[in-house]
Length: 177
Image 1 (cartoon, helix red, strand yellow):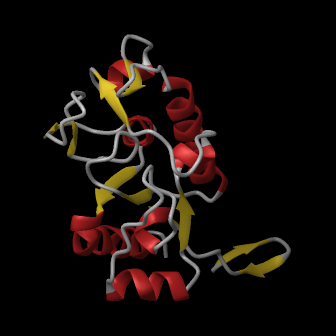
Image 2: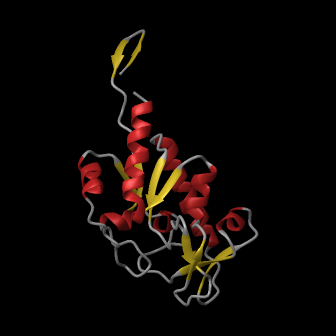
């Protein structure tokens, strides 16, 4: 509770940005989802804490769509040095940048400090992404949205790190009370 001159006002609960595909929404490039069955996510969903986003869709790409891969690094995409392309070498960078900006806008709008994003994605990968060869090989790296969020102080976890995300979220909530 915060108390001001006009009385007591309950603070709104913290929110968590999450890849929409992890909640079962069929927004991936292949029209599928990557639903994660996890008790913590279900609890957060029921509490209204989760803010779902698919940066690629919010950036203007359709479902289904050709797969995109980063040709370089996400940091280089953000500075205009690298691109995100399809296997046919179509430059789709603008959609990834627009989607990353939308995700950041959601974080700013909802005062979000934590995100759980889909690993291996050229938008959302937090520790690994595809290698740019369209051969389904993965390399250490991060997606465009993840890089933009991290540059703005948002802590990003993958669906493989939900327990770590919970620990971080709970400790952040305690310091804000």
